[in-house]
View (cartoon, rainbow, N blue to C red):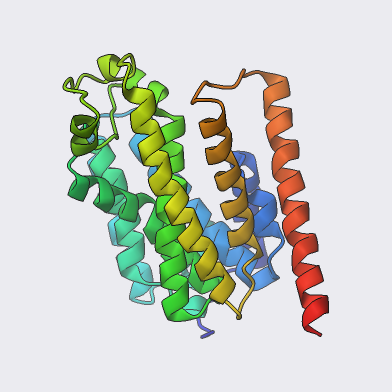
Length: 298
C-alpha cells in the first residue's frame, strides 16, 4: 500500500454516516474490514452512490450529463494529486493513494451511468450488454479487490466474474420493474433465441417465453458465480470476507428466484426483515467458516 493524502477522522465519519443512511445491503460486510480498508470501501461506495443518484433521480438529460461530467473532472483532479473539495473527495483521494486505485475504473462507473442517462436501454446487443455489465459492476469490483488486497491477476478475474454474476442477478430480479420505466436490459439476441419478437418492455414481460429466457440467463449468472468462487479460493492474500458475503448473498438470491419460477416474493415490512435476517445468517456463516479455515491452517 502506498501512502499520500489523508482525510480527517471527521471526513471519514461523514462518509460512513452517509453510507449507513443509504441503507446499503453490504454496510455491515464493509464494517468487518480493518479501518483503512473499510474507509476506502466506504469512499468507493459513496462515489458509486453519488453517480447512480445522478442517473436515477430527477433532472433533465442535459443536467445529468453535466453532473456526470463534473464527476469526471473531480476524479481527474484527484488522480492528479489535488486535494478534495468535500469529505467524500478527500476520502477518495486517500483511498486512491493508499490502494493505487485506477482512474479507468472510476471512469468506467461514470460511463455506465451515462449509458442509462442517454436513454432507457431497450434490448441491447450482446456487446452493449457486456459493456454495461463491465461498467456498472465489474469496474466497481476492480476498485474493491485492490482494497481487499487480492493478488492482481486473481483479483481482476474475481472482480469481473463476480461483477457480471451480481449484475445479471439484479437484472433478472428487476425485469418487471424496469419495464414499467420503459427499460429492457435483456439482450436482443437473447430475446430472438427464445422467440420473443417484440421489443416493447411491457409486452416482453407478458410473453410466455420470458420464464425460459430468464432461466437461460440465470445459467450464465450461475456459471459466473462458479468462476468467482474458484477465483476466491485462489485469493490467499488480503481480506476477502466482504467479497465472499456479497457472493453468497447474491447467489442465494439467484437460486431463490429460480426455485420460485421467478415469482416475486411478497413485499412489506416482514419481507424486509426476512431479507435482513437471511443476509445476517450468511454473514455469520462466512465469518465462522473463515475462522474454522484459519484454525485448520494452523
